[in-house]
Image (tube, rainbow, N blue to C red; front, side, top):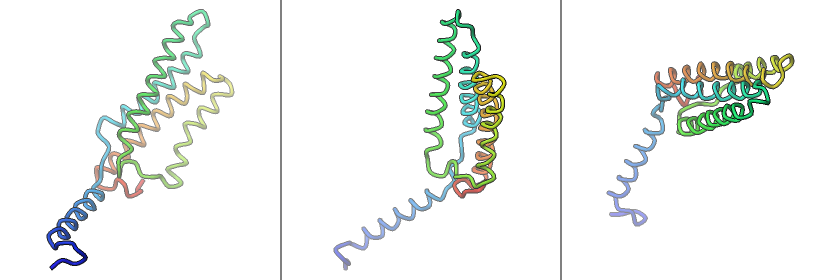
Length: 155
């Protein structure tokens, strides 16, 4: 006998599908092993390259343009890789206050170096400190994700 026009076999199949979907959503989806170093390297090299291009003399305009193009490609690569990896369920949870505040340290260090060294100092410091912080954060997220806590907000 069917209830509301749904056969018992169809209802059972729907329940099984819903159960598999819930189980898949609960499963941790850790970061790939190559991702922390790749994302941090692209980020750091892109900003550092932009800073280096600002230090080159004007007479080397072709070298400056090539360094800026390479830096832009590195930053675009960082955005593409990050989007492909992190925009899946359970990858990088939202950080609470202490973890989120620590992510501002590279920006503060870069801002401090911007005072005496201008834009090149800011970009070089942001590339180096931001890349290192990015690497450490993603490595920690990968370790906690591999332990089964990804997507739970644990930091």
